[in-house]
Image 1 (cartoon, rainbow, N blue to C red):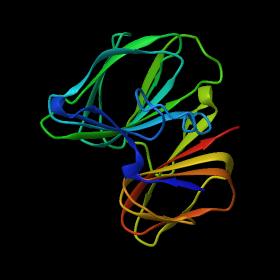
Image 2 (tube, helix red, strand yellow):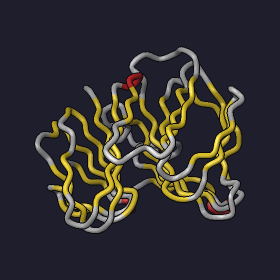
Image 3 (cartoon, rainbow, N blue to C red):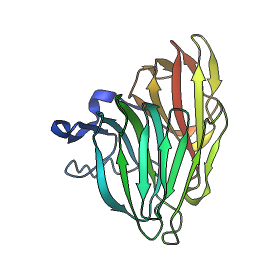
Image 4 (cartoon, one colour):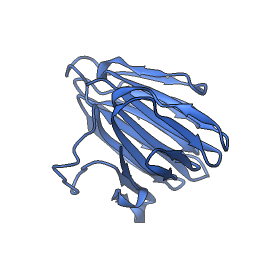
Length: 217
């Protein structure tokens, strides 16, 4: 179990434009050949957008992009003509496939915080696709078969326990609160990379929310 703390993330974004980013993996100018991916996961970015701030239209390809809003409301537009609002509890997925362009903005009046996770597809290419699953229930898994991965959302009360999935690669990201794992206590923005997970549990220290990726080899 390899614990990475929030303050170890690579800084990014443009604070003067109201964009603050923190990258868990090698990203942009922060190139680290020893931190390129974990399982299928190639990025786990914490993004904070001030009201009116956002990312102008930009391209993606050969990537499964899963977004989880922690607070606020995300406006998403892409080159397929879709425009959506993504709120806390919703799961958004954009399969970039052979290529797509999109815009992400905070068009609201409150700060926006979201976690965006990129996964490498098993087979590159194809046609882009998009979906939003509103209000995903606790413990309801969300499958990304294109990347051989499953996302589990866990919300724990203090003292409440949950089993982590067994698997070759398991990635745990804390969005809020504190949780206790075998390696110690993790807080907001902390993550654990677990190889060969078996019979592990997480226990809520406070009210907490976890994003857990279960990934095949």
